[in-house]
Length: 502
Image (cartoon, rainbow, N blue to C red; front, side, top):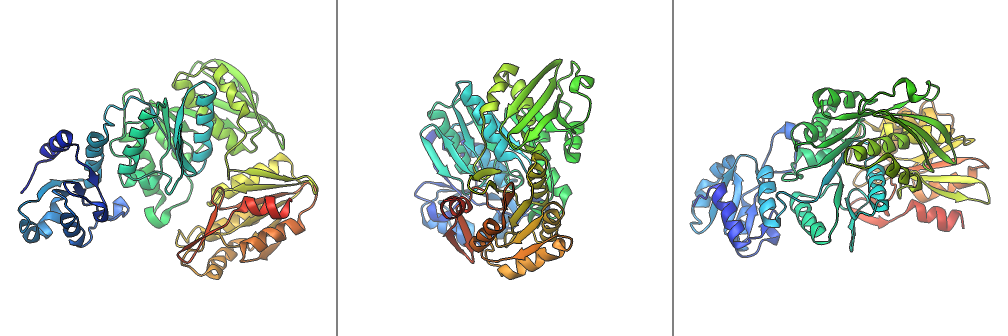
């Protein structure tokens, strides 16, 4: 039996039917949405064996949603189940978003949802925005790389952006909790796979775009187009948009989205911002101070000028702050409100400082796992005035191999001593991963190769001297290490605090 999509929507609305995308979780009367494999969109789609639909029907599913091609491939088998209704759609993932809106009552969602996208800076930007809302008396919810949390709820995040059903379910719970805003990190995978289908964003920040995830997207252009979709193809009337204008891909977004408001960070040494301070809604910032104590940023926007002091270090954090401020002003915050950002002390695993007062050594645990992120993290420490930079890093297994020598090169150019170690090797040989990185370290001043990560941290502590900064890159907030297919407890912060700085 074939049922139209509109008929299925009516049935779900009238009978409060449950949606399922995993055949193992299907129960009687559920609607099973048969998802294509999570391949990058430019590669096309595939669907697995009919076994999953058979399992869903056996578990009690009365309605199956699938593509026309999939139905045609197994039509004889499907007609053998006359009691099952089939709904044929062109795009299963997009249709899932529309069905989720009905099931979880998230259509015309009354709470603003803000998306933060980019290769680096998403987590810090989301926490900055959360801090601003909280200090202004609001109740924000945050869905991102570190955790999904809101009033009365906290859970570690298995994915930066949840799957579509989990996301709509979370939005329903966030509404019940009485929150005022939802702040989401949105990954390129999530956009490409339509995990955010059915979500109407009220605001978006584009932080930057640098090489990452090419194992999935294959080219930087595909990667950029996935990010750009959130600005170009997911419009909402009067959606606030903040785009980093120094970034080459950001410039392209500004051109294609005239309503987007740019933000720029000008290099130190330029004349003060008065030379670019106009009545246009463009955010200009310049560093007045950058030291181990933090940053002082001069601002110009829409004819207004002000300064902001922050304990965060590094030009990349100045960019994160400017992007959040640019969006916040569009959302109705005042310049006086923005001063509340001066009290923000940072995010777990994002240049998170652990200070050893006995040796006067600062350890910085950071999530940097791309060449650009490593460059920015080291640059931040160098410009803050530390004597030497010792960098401990590796690369994850079963991920983009092309960036490994690039990461080595990024570290070789900016660190005084490099300690090469394991990150999350997963199913790859840890030694082979380090071999892949080594060509990029050819110009390094000093390299020590210690595969065991704990031993690598101990080595960094042993060779560090007064006034040094030790950058521990790659894992950030993570409290595990994946070796093979097993996840072991491992925390860079715990080792530094409990065994090195004790």
